[in-house]
Length: 242
Ligand code: NAD
Image 1 (cartoon, protein in one colour):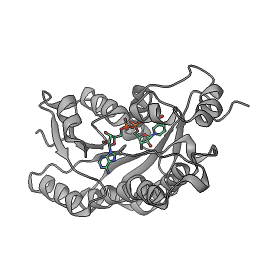
Image 2 (image 1 turned 180 degrees about the vertical axis):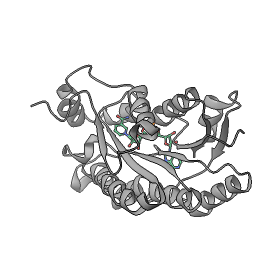
Image 3 (image 1 turned 30 degrees about the vertical axis):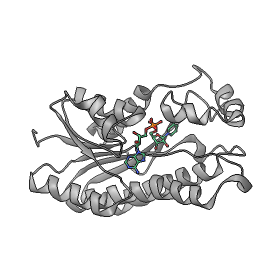
């Protein structure tokens, strides 16, 4: 692995994380591709020499810590990080189990924090992008638990931006609207979500993972050098249509 321009992407085995990995490879970077789904990592990236396959669960601090220690020992600490791994669960307040709420928080918030905390123990400069969601701003009867985790991501993003600014590390978020990925396929099985969200998007109905990858790549690039602590909404107009 050429260690000059290393990026790290979580959730690199599917959807937005996979599209972002491809976008960063196109930009000439080497990518440390993290996902708990080892098969999906192999299916996407087996033949790509610039990708370091790294199967791990972002909620397991031992695994996360070891990953960064291994990268440090190879001199391959990333200076760009994209936290795209996440899960979706839906259900009205009474119908959502505490275990589901706990899992959402562990993966979407604590997992993002763990990767960022261990990455920034080693990083000396660079940029981080967290993947939030318009669910942080737009509630349905059934997306509230997921939405709270994404609201937390927005706050985590601005807080980390302030904490890490003295170390020349920028932190931003991208908040996608409905994007055609396996996760959105699960979400659209919920009729309330489909009706209230998808029908409101200006055009087209759903974005692509590449739409989010392009926004993330911009925020990671030096062209965004004076942008930090922000959440960029990329949603085809979802949040501005009445
Ligand atoms: P996806 O399900 O296609 O991909 C998510 C990937 O994360 C999967 O490969 C999964 O294995 C991995 N992952 C999940 N938990 C993990 C863990 N504990 N450790 C390591 N890897 C783990 O989903 P996607 O649509 O690409 O979503 C990516 C991000 O975008 C998520 O944070 C999601 O909340 C956010 N998002 C998606 C949409 C959408 O419409 N698809 C909209 C808004 C925000």
